[in-house]
Image (cartoon, rainbow, N blue to C red; front, side):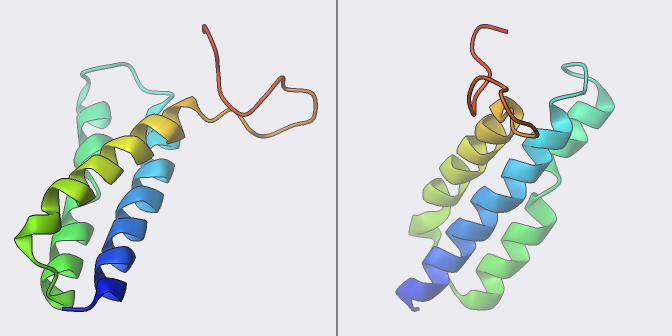
Amino acid sequence: MSIFNVFLVAAVSAVVNFFLGRWRRGCRKFTLKWWILIHASIPLIIPLRLWLGTPLVFVPLFIGLAVVGQLAGSRWRGGGKGDGGFFVSGE
């Protein structure tokens, strides 16, 4: 086990879920598409974690970063000048 492997799985978990959260932003809550986008990273993260041999003790970290990635992605505004900031506030 290498600390680099833990950081790699953590980064992939956060980044992949950021983009899935961006995509999920346009979906109605609790629809099939919304549910699939929330869980779509699991088939990537679990095999990566197993292949790199990261211990089970880090699984809560990976789940937490996946949630943070989803939330950040769904709130990221981006995309233009003068949009008033990076995150949507009060919308």
